[in-house]
Structure formats: structure tokens, C-alpha cells
Length: 339
Ligand code: DAH
Image (cartoon, rainbow, N blue to C red; front, side, top):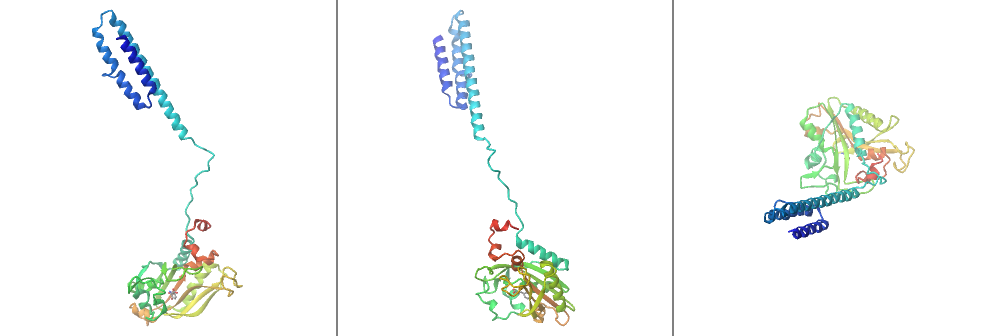
């Protein structure tokens, strides 16, 4: 029995030394010290010993048990320490590494300019409205007095989704909806995206932005139009800005004008941006055509109105001296971070 005990002790020691992980150690603890373990089995055999041998053997078994327990505990501790050491090594912080910086988002220059413009018009009593980007041919052209053979209605210029449905080519499309749904006095601006089948270059994009303005009331004249647009131009470009109204033509206004302001690049001397003229065109406008009022159920003998359409992209590129409209749509962070 003594020999059995010695060999058991030896086997336990070797197994503990060879154990590779905490799980194996646990198994060895059960195997040797557990209730059904090998040492317990040996203890059970003590009954067959003589009364003299029993205490001697009992002590030996207890010593062996204690020894195995110590081996197991120290191996388990050693393993735990090793695991902690490995973990710490893996988690070592290199405080010389550059920090991860968080870049904050910024307001896009188009939105900055749009917000400024809306502020100006709201301070003059205009409401801000939204119109649909997917429009009917009727609202975009027909009720705006645009004749069937007008070049804008060509497939080359307009993105048609079906025969009668298209992507609006101008925010003017919102005018009739507003006039049909509201009674004068009307004083609104409607900002939004517009779409044209244009070739992309430094000054053209198939998607760009306009702000439509519409005023309808009794006794509205061209003077009101001039006053509002001059006020707008001076607030956007500075109070020394000169504003010029040039006679023009739009099917939905009569008379129609195009409005130029002093070139913000050269101050009116003439440069590359204004093509040497000293002026930059920023919008189209006019007195709402009686046909348009009539088609929206408003009596032109009682009410008059003016309307205007401003190119938001143009105002933005001239204000920030941006040479290429494509920069506004590419979302290049190096460009956007400058604003
Ligand atoms: N819709 C015109 C365009 O896209 C701009 C315009 C001109 C709007 C005259 C108007 C207006 O409301 O009265 O070129």
C-alpha cells in the first residue's frame, strides 16, 4: 500500500507539472483529491490494515494529500500569474502614439448661404415653403405659360420620368401650387434642388439649387420687386453693391428682368469671373404673367404679383470665390474644411 501511495504521489506530481492550463489542473484536483479520487480510494482500503499499521499509513496518506494540494495550488497560482502577465503585455499602452482625433462636422457652404438668404427674406416677411422635386409637366411648364414648343421642354434639357412626370427644372414649379392653395396676400420663398440634363463642367451641374420667391397682393408693382431684390443683394454682398435690372424674357413674367450685381471678385473693374463686364448675373425675375395668375384662379384685374428665381450655387461660388461648381457637390473634406 505504501508503494501504491508513493507511485500515486509521483504520478500526481508529474501530471501537475505537465498540466497546460487551469482546466487540466481542475481535472487533476478531482482525479486525485476528489470524493471518488484515487487518494480517497486508497484511504478506503485502510480497513484491511493491522491496527498498528493504520495510524502510520493514515499519516502518510494525509501527508501525500497535503503535498498534492500544495502542488496543485502553486501550479494554479503560477498559471494565473502567467495569464495576467500575458494579458498585461498585450494591453500595453504606447503613450508616444499620436492620439486619434475626432473631426467635427461643419455646415456646408451651400447651407450657410441658404440660411443667410432665408434670414434676409424672413426678415422682410416671407414664409419659407417646400415644393416637390418630382413634378408634373403641368406645374413645371404648362401652367407657367411655357409653350409646348419651348426648348426647356425638350428631352435634351429635362429629365422626364414618364410622359407627364419629370424632375423639376426650376423652383418656379412651386408657384402655381402655392397660388392654388392660398389666397392673396401671398409672400413666400421656396428653396430646393432643381435638375437639368446639362453636361457637367465648371459652371454647370445636372443638379443645382434655386430659391423661388413669389408675392401676390393688390397693388403690387415693379417698384416692390426692385426694392426687395436691391435689399436682398445689399445684405448678401455688402451695402455698396450696385444692382442692375436688365430687360429679359421669361414665359411666366411680363415684364421680365435679369438682375446683375457688382462683381464681388473685382469690385466692378472687370475680371475673369465676370468675363470683363464688372457684373455678375444672380437671378431672373418679373411681374407674374396674367395668364399664370388666371390659370391659378386669381383675377389679374384685382391682384398683381412679382416672382424671382435666384441661383443659390452662383451666390455661393461668388461669395466664397469658388472657381468650380463641382467642388460644391463632391464632398471632398479638404475643400469643406475650409468653411
Ligand atoms: N425659373 C427661372 C430659371 O430657372 C428663373 C426665374 C425667372 C424665376 C423669373 C422666376 C421669375 O420666378 O419670375 O431660369
